[in-house]
Length: 458
Image 1 (cartoon, rainbow, N blue to C red):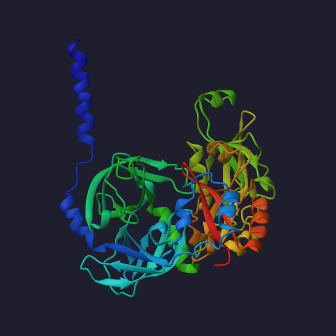
Image 2: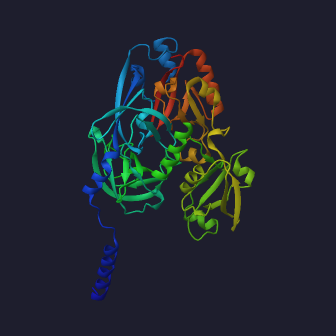
Image 3: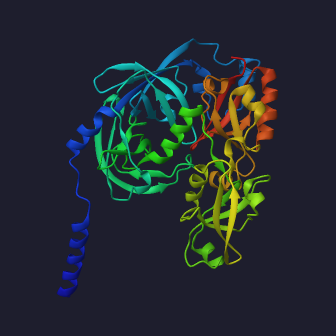
């Protein structure tokens, strides 16, 4: 081996090491941040529905009715039971405002917050946002220790991080790691550019803070990727900039508004980039334009490649939705697009995602507490659903649908024996089911397909 080459290689490694961020004093970091971290305990009343647990995937509802008579008033056969759960959170205001995950408090009728000194408070749920999995709580406190909030836009791969939470109920557990990736897109988080870390996160950590080496919160620990249900080295956090935007809106009005463009998009690989005359894959390729949408009004077209949004480069197609969602309703956005091999600038007036007519099924929402929306072409392709399914975008707390176990991001495949492929079809089927008092809903959740019995009159 050439000795000069070896010397050069070692010198290069030394140069990198010399400029790497030194590991922080995690003991000091924990002492600096621990007081602002809380444990969140929840309780809920759940119908004890034996049938719901025993129906196998794909079981025909007609056979269910054959064995048990008319469509069952599901849930009457057994008493209700109390169910408890636990998560984490952190104080963002001295008067008692706390951030956690929406899935931690979803469906809860009692929420208790415990501070590091074991002082407990009853908490009020100010609001939840299921699209970003953020919830805002309020306890009756004064001069409480507050977590310093950082800027998640500054987060870089390789940065040191510290997670504090209550995994498996072990309160104020600290784990360390680094940022493994930024702007990660997950199937159930189109509006969240997740921060990926290798800090150990387990059930109970949900809603807890992810601190940087300065002791600033840069994210809310939300999800893990695991085949076993325990930590496998892949944890995902909601960027604090996204969470702050949601929290401000929840505090002000109890709900969240998001920007809406009205396009379906897909990623660009090397082959597609070549076909569009691009040097390398980048941007978001528009595959469809929704009618009466801001994109339609602005003149965007299928085949346009969005290269930047308000001056921010679009590297992956998943970069675009969070940028649009955070844009104030009614603001103008400047898009640089590649059209027929030439770059053009398109100005779009951003609409309101929550009020778009194609997303909400009013009748279904009135009957069941469900908000549904149609799947776009790209989503159907990813899910492998050509002619079936609508997305459950939200479930109203304490509704019949919530009590049956439906969750946001479930895919509704059938109402009874009737398959549904649109919000219109689902609404009609649910209206018919209301007359019968109960119905079995076939839903897809992750890789599982199951029936959930529903009592519309409960």
